[in-house]
Amino acid sequence: MTLHLDDRQRAMLLEMGVRVWLPGAAFALAPQGAGDTAATDPVRLPAQRPVPAPPPTAPVLAPVLAPAAGLQALQNMDWAALAQTAAQCQACGLCAGRTHSTLDAARASQARWMVVGDPPDDQEDSAGQAFVGDNGTLLDNMLKAVGAVRTGGALPQGMDAAYVTKVSKCRVPAGRVPQAAELAQCSAYLQREIALVRPQVIVAMGRFANQVLLAESPEAATLPLGRQRGTVYRYQGVPVVVTYAPQALVRNPADKAKAWADLCLAMDVLAAGT
Ligand code: SF4
Image (cartoon, rainbow, N blue to C red; front, side, top):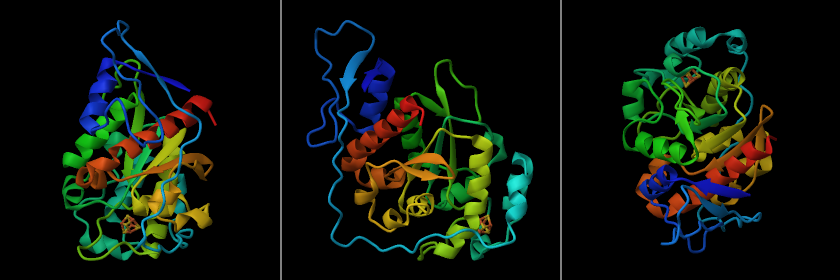
């Protein structure tokens, strides 16, 4: 496909650390030459995107199964009831460390884009919101680069809405990772969010978000991220593209070019309307 980048999107890509030429990346952005006169520049995206080799010590994750009985009532709830239930939920042990659930009814909206991140960190737990601080700023810039803004505010003309959430609504105690059973329990909330948001594409950002959203592709769910990338999966009937967590990109800016390639794949999905 051909992607046109305007000045704002170019600025966002620069903010992400993605330059107009990406050596070794899955695609190339056309250099902005001195002779450019139009407001937008054509960018070619080749059809094939190579999948990088996995790291030698990739962790093995347990598959995430369906939530246990007891949370079925969520599937009939509206946004307000869902957020209130999450704020008081004791369905798994993660409730013990919760200050605030990150399921924020103030951001409730249908949206073409949905972003699902790893369990909340301390900042997100304190704020009761997904993706805050430096990670949130980077995510907002990534979204702007694809022409989307978070739900919860005014939608600028010509922009798409993006609903952002966390794969679990409660933070995980320091020193351990979320258990497959905890992620499975909280997936009942995620499933209701998906039904309410009705996204056309889901971007899974991070190891644990991927673990849940690839539950219907068990052969891929336990692979390292490098081998999961470049494929369009399905969850609850919605196309899913996986990529790096913003916090990982903040730590390792070299992966921002790969994350941009993943966002381009998500844009391909939207453009195809599959
Ligand atoms: S992580 Fe999810 S399932 Fe577990 S207590 Fe929190 S809201 Fe409930």
